[in-house]
Amino acid sequence: MAEKIAFIGLGIMGKPMAKNLLKAGYELSVYDLFPDPVNELVKEGAKGCKTGSDASSNASITITMVQDGPQAESAICGDGGVLEGASKGHLVIDMSSIAPGVSERIGKKCAEKGVSFLDAPVSGGEPFAISGDLAIMVGGSADNFEQAKPLFDILGKTSILCGSHGAGQITKLANQICVGANIHALAEALTLAAKAGVNPETVYKAIQGGLAGSNVINAKAPMMVERNFNPGFRIELHYKDINNAMEAARDLDVPLQVTANLQQVLTALVIEGEGKSDHSAIAKYVEKLAGIEIKKH
Image: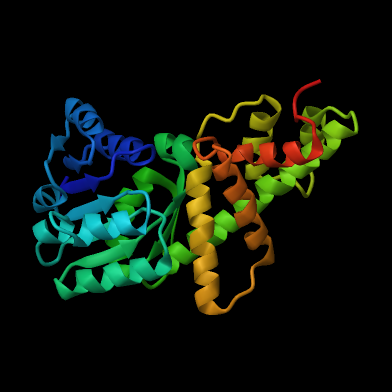
């Protein structure tokens, strides 16, 4: 393939995404702060690099997938970062979920060096990162989107250009509001059923075919009734996204009552040590208040 790709950030999402690009035949240079995932990718055919700048100097497109805004800004604009190795005409695609304002700032810093930039956060968690079925929400120019589209088609089931820099992040925050509120409502519904002596699993199966049915319910209701809170998407990451949503709402003077309540629920769960659990563990917050667990009868 003509374009060489650098991939920076090989965590729970980044590693399977990088592997999918390798399987598709792309020549990949990889970097992470931790050596183990780099070594794992090297065994599968990638070139391991010591810095982000080293990785980007071997590529025409760099993808970053890190935890939050400060990490994204450091990985792209900091010492040893992507912009140190990227030449004019390089395309940087940040697929991290960060505050929209940070994406806008990174885009400006890239432009100053003649480097193009897309913010392209994703939804779907680790399972969809592995299967290549992520939903990708993109901010940037149409030309850069078309350049990146072959990669998005490998990494995701859908990719949509949402607007200019930061628009992908706004769309991701909207997604996270809907997902979190849906999980919280589901937890309350199944807790009510459990308290009333009705099998929560039966309630889930009965409502999934009606108007209440959703991908969130299909994915998270079984986890709740099976008491399986192994992370597909961690509470601490959803908490970060909701904090970013509230920051954006404050900057834009938008009251978000449901989102503010969700922020408090997630705050309590993080304080209680549930940050590493899947966000379906929002159920634990509701269960604690009701004094009952959601589980099969």
